[in-house]
Image 1 (cartoon, helix red, strand yellow):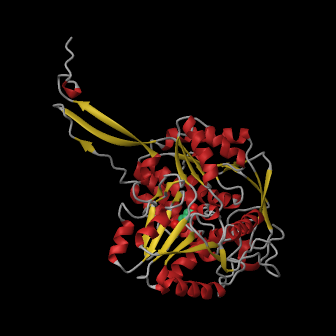
Image 2 (cartoon, protein in one colour; image 1 turned 135 degrees about the vertical axis):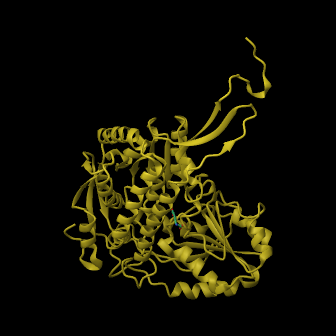
Image 3 (cartoon, helix red, strand yellow; image 1 turned 135 degrees about the horizontal axis):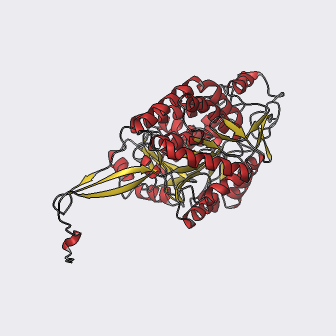
Length: 515
Ligand code: UN1
């Protein structure tokens, strides 16, 4: 940390967030301990070693889990609106720390400062949402078929929720899960990505003051680090729900492991999101939606725009508008607000990006905007790449895959039905969008014969969903839903209750059983 530059106020931000040179990667509320290997967290922005984190051993994990189990017994008895009040205070705390936390997100993960702040704003928004929700955990009442009987359902907390989150949204995705889980009466054990462990530690530091102030048992919020902890969570029978965000490959493993022990999962896996650009589109709107979607977060959102499906009549014009816009993109330090595109997370990601471009070329792709690694002063981390555009066909193997990098594949279509088939013609099903001013096209795209994704937008890009809607997708995206709408139901168990207040015991379905 001694070498962290003073530029952009990073040192001060780290100090405000309680990040030290060496940090303990296991904590239960305010108690920190960790005896495992060390993870070094480097900034992809400038290659600096930001700080070290001592990860959790199996024994550390076990201690945290025991604290979580104990805390649940107490937390579940606190009335939901009172839990909501505690989450409200967490939202206030996040408002106070928006600037340093946004900076840390930007520095440790590499997304632009604006997006770093945006991520913290998502956390604040979900806190507000959860506070309201804490008074609306509604169940239904049914009419019993038997006289003098009452039937209804109620929702109870499930217990300990395991949250395994990805590097690309190192703080927001945790909050979508934890804030909801908490108002539902669950406790949480969080394993952040080993690429962004400091973001996890910073969040825990921010909320621990709220837990302390409210005399909440410390195991309500547990943090564990290191990949072994992820495996322990997946295999732990005491964890009825695991919310996993990450690649389809690892998600498949998580899904099997947790299902094997009859646990539930919320899976938020890969996306391969397309925008259909109709001949009835407003091109200036397409430009912002498509370019932000493709190069924002350097193409490392699961909602990033990976494919543009353009009507043949406006194909050439759209490409030239895009080429022009790509020519103006500033690539550089994400903390410098003049830049549009920051670095990839690490050199492994740069390698995957280069390999994907090679593969696309081999399969017959035509480069329309050249990619490559950016070198020279300011780019010493080796993680900066040029956003590129490749004309490709949907069936190319590489187009069918998700590459977490700013590579945009473009293709032509003739009829709207064909465009929808192309958009749906990938294994993933997270986000999708159409730019059109035609009511017919728009409604078809949104109909049951339209997009097969969890998110389908009109005249908006594929990324940047608001927290109020349920977030997630179909097919290889995993089917999970997080955040808004009724996603809370996944964090609770439904109980159907039937009460007989009569003096007879009639059986359902009219069955006679006389003794
Ligand atoms: C992710 O990339 O894992 O819709 C989440 C968006 C953000 C969340 C992305 N609100 O792009």
